[in-house]
Image 1 (tube, rainbow, N blue to C red):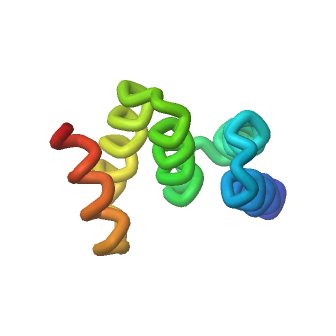
Image 2: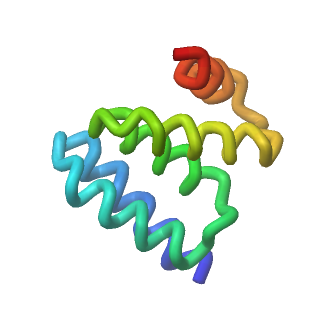
Image 3: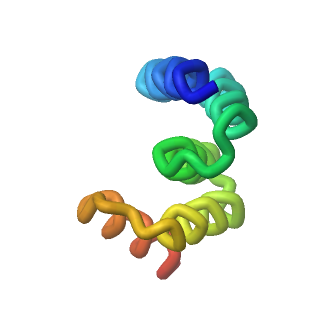
Length: 85
């Protein structure tokens, strides 16, 4: 399941980079279904939600990601900035 979740995340990142937020959200949702606690899936869910203008979902996902104790200083800074809004 983890390998499939990571493949979904690669697809989600590719779609996000191409500006296809619907496809990115769908692929990220598949990854979260396969591996709900996977930190990179939670973080990407927050980033996609933020890009789609869904502030409530972005804040919830960023908070969940922070609660997991991330080891990513730049990502943590981005998450805390989103939560401060």
